[in-house]
Length: 86
Image 1 (cartoon, one colour):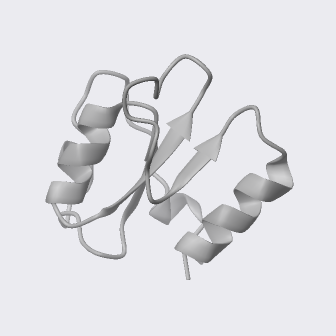
Image 2 (image 1 turned 90 degrees about the horizontal axis):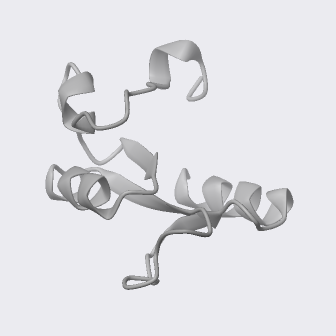
């Protein structure tokens, strides 16, 4: 399935997320991240960025097509993720 260990990568802070996808990033690859630079890089490589708003970021660029909020209701975030991952 999509959510097994083979399909989820945890990348150290400060490292390029692209370097951790052995087959390269494509349309079916998603990145949840709070750092805009990482998300833009991912998007340029062909993947789908999902902005994580954590209360201390997003003040200059608050609109993202796909986003979750750490202070939102978990069901709202879950539903958004289901819609994006279709």
